[in-house]
Length: 127
Image (tube, rainbow, N blue to C red; front, side, top):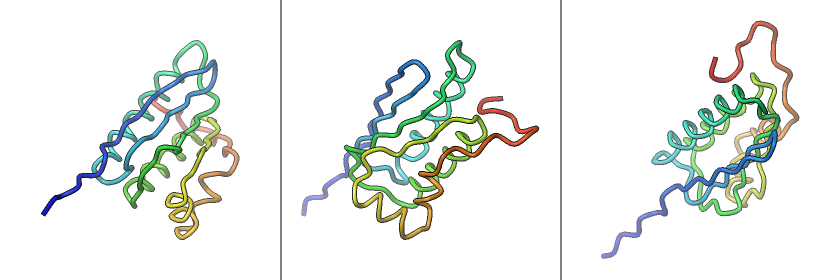
């Protein structure tokens, strides 16, 4: 019997002035969600401290193969971080599996809504 291993998670980062694009390839699941979350939050923290801080985070899922509850959890944590920093979050090129997961869990509107203004007294990402 042959065991097929899922493709590993691969992240490609691109910065444009005040925007960051993260292209996600493979499975956003238990095996890769920590790497995804760490990469994105570290990038946001570094760019927040830079001369041209991030105003927009675009997650490109055109090459996403699968997603599970761990991946969803990472997305929700990223949303919280972007809201705290006043950064717009965009989930681009969502494949049907991701779209379905967001709809079934009731998180589609939350993750695709305009950014929530930072609350007074909250610290930005990386502070």
